[in-house]
Length: 191
Length: 191
DNA sequence: ATAGTATTTTAACGAACGTTAAATAAAGGT
DNA sequence: ACCTTTATTTAACGTTCGTTAAAATACTAT
Image (tube, rainbow over all chains, first blue to last red):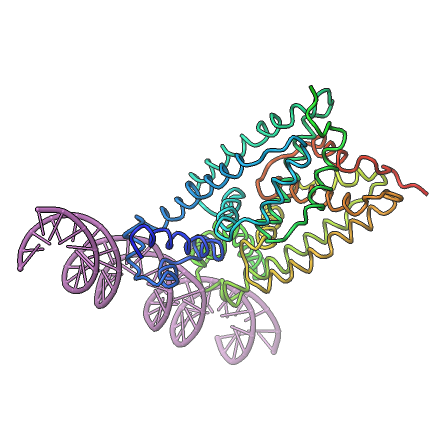
């Protein structure tokens, strides 16, 4: 196992442990044990426990979010959001755990103030982004703002169900729920 | 401070600490420090750390849930759910933190397998209960199941926003979102 | 006053924690 | 072959953790 490989392997195992036992419940010794390396190797590649945790959130989680956001294309808005949620079912185990850990920090169930501030900033961008996406489909709607808000709220629960509670949500179920919230909108872009 | 008072005070402080730092991040010494009693007093009233945590979930959380569920009456279904969510804003600090801790366990972000099983059982009762509540209003609807599911999902996010993220949600905002999901239902019970 | 019970504290136990110093081994270029 | 840099380990440090034994104090009924 060459240098960078071991570094990645440590991060991989760390994600599992932070996920299963939280920041304080995770010990460097247990990580080293599962990686099958000696304890100070963790300190060879990471300055300390906190920086290992931080890197997972700052790099892995936010990369995952960006990757995921720039992936989809569909001109039917219900299809768009259905795929957006449905494909979470098939995320790899590592990505899913990184996502789960991010949500844990997002809900301020773990991590420190610095990470929380990052999450707050990110959260502020969510509603405007979806308003922009939905703009062509919500023309002339009186309750456009509430609709977008409700959709974002629904998406959040669906994400939590798949990623945090580790449930499988069928595509039709997802589509049904999104359609209920989006009913009254145009489904295809109008010009 | 008489006996039972101190016991309650310990539990109160414990709720704060478990909430702020999680199970593993909380230390008996810190709790005793904030309670202003000596460390072994915690062990005089509770067998150990785990039983202190367990009692908070098993007694305080589930009592709160029951109390909350048996409180509301309204013949307009949108009013009913709006009040149900809105009044969470005004929960006392202790109740809110107990609720938050319960959700943390519910999402398996804390606690052990035994508590998770309790939460799973409780979760299974949620959907049927709301189907029962909504029955008079969803007669003859083809997508009744999906509607109830969507509503429950929306409620979950609203609860998380108020209780976990500690946001204040205005009554109109809540009503708007519930109305969007429930549109198409009768709002008053039909006979 | 006294005996007995309930409450509270001081002091300490062993274990596990995050972290580091120092030594060793492996790899690569010259 | 030798030197330099990189990778890895052994062993230990000081601290904090959950927990308990034993002693001290306060309360209550006789």
